[in-house]
Length: 322
Image 1 (cartoon, one colour):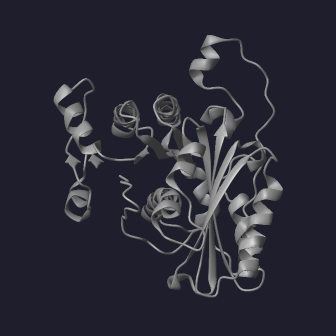
Image 2 (cartoon, rainbow, N blue to C red; image 1 turned 180 degrees about the vertical axis):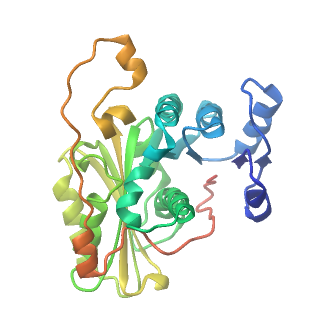
């Protein structure tokens, strides 16, 4: 489903339903169209760039329709670059809070942190393309656990138990090859630029390990040791392990950490949202933890913060994912 489909999306996309030019809320006919498109789904992903009209205004509407139908609803959205201006950032924060109230889990990807990945001299078009790719990574990281049969399979009920009504979530992706690739990939995922806080505060963690035919049991175990060593002992953790020949020589680790009670502004900036600030006296809060991308490790161990395979949509064991 694509809301306010752009021409290139309409031509090249494979969405089941395309709604052109969504602008106003309260359109009953449009709501019925969207609801019809959601029928039969067990899991719905909502992706949007927050701060503009469609992402900020339409995404919460679609989310509420989905969640009201009893569907597990997960949002994966981007927060604007700082250079896009304070007004767009403020609109994005308000939109994320509205979205957060209408989804089971929301993963926010701050575009500015992509600068840590993109490096110097990255073209503007490439930077926004990278943001789109990260949205895909977030969706694929969750859906692969359910839809791709692997060495260790995860039931949809397990995913639902961790992600239902879990609030703000975070995404980390690590890819590595060469010596100690399992440890490097796991460490890169837990310290990735998109992880705004330590995963030790999460109440639920879902992670997926993808490797080639050379993936070993010891490497799966090493990834598990890294993740569980950082998580709270009471945290509910599930994981999947997939063998894909396209990943021969490399290991990809994707981590979704859920259950953070704070709003996105509190999580990223260490401050309450604008509405919360207006509702109560401001309180001092500690500065946000500084997260350093594992660039040195990446260079030394052939690690990369992003995966490379782009799978097609799948259904698994009768589950429908949109």
